[in-house]
Image (cartoon, helix red, strand yellow):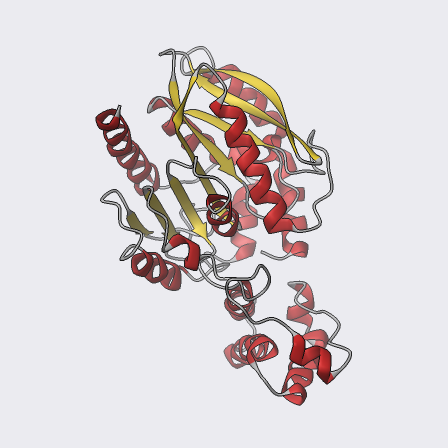
Length: 359
């Protein structure tokens, strides 16, 4: 989701701060204790909360990886509370941080994907040193942009033991932009032809080898109200020579980067979930991309699941449109259907069995 939509969502999320505290008071006596920790990750100081099960001395652990935007613990915990409880009941420590520049974490990200991947590796490194965490059983779970960050982190550290990808990007970001702009147009009640044209020109902007076709696409995008709303407009290349020098490599970080090239080589267990009514990322493409990657990312625990009637947050939805999603978030209550939590819970039990077999 692009920055203006992220900003709107973040403002709505602010209503969840008080509920975060209520969650801790309500459940801590039964399931867990909390501990705030600070981690130095290069130039970043990361602050986050550990949710630690009260039963047992040593636990597997999961690090939550946010989607895009200035997201914090206080904003996100109320929205994913049922998921946190699933991990705690399964005996996992759950860690969630503040994005640098938001909440208590410090630092300015200049290369978002690589900065976030580095931070994630440092968080795992810090958790490995704790006496209450099993160092070989630390995994990652996250949503949306996490679909890029988590695989990228796996190229930087061998210490990721599993991954749960929820409504995650599974293609180059410009292709996601094309899907988003078409779906947004339809959701806003605008002519479907306008959405198809916008999506086609977003792709043309990146895929064409003709400078004039590129300029035509950029001009349309920069003058489109829908594209401006989604923050897709940007200045064009200044010359044809500069245009020809641009990188179109799917293995280089940028608009063409395809995280599935990395996922296809991962050997640890992966659970991928997609919402049938997701209007932010293409769930059909995502399911197919993960299924294809699993042909080489061979692990008998690998699983991909389409969640019926679910949106980008995997909440039950009527339309899946962004405005409906924002209204759900503004309501302050997580709206997962039983399928989401049941799938995660069952998969974690199989994962724990696999961990125990290795120990």
